[in-house]
Length: 140
Image (cartoon, rainbow, N blue to C red; front, side):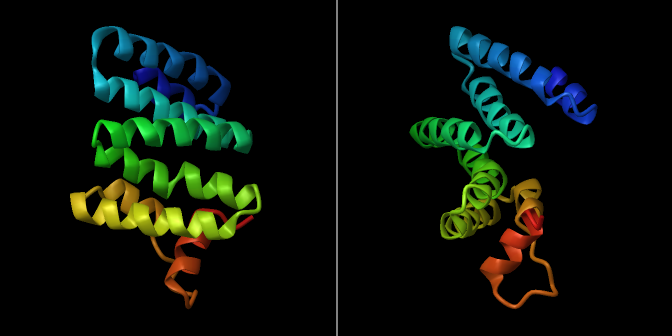
């Protein structure tokens, strides 16, 4: 998992993919659900950072299904406040992006996940809460 932080910090998102696939494999092999979800989530994030939005959304949807199956609200919030809104906005689905942000913010606030709340933070210059959140994330 350290490799994710190291390579993301260096902007080497293609390297992140390699290591996150390994984290997923190891998590599956050892039954460590947190590691599996970490790898799946950060793989989706790295795909978005590589501007591979369709792939990112597909990976995020698979990861969301797994997080829901495992009842892991932390990774649901992370997906819903970062990669899912970004990918949907870039793919021309602003309503899906806003819905994800709303749901993600609710989950993040419920569980006290401050990092996911920060990703979905509002821009005080905007009027609509949904618009504030989505534009705070991605305003090209």
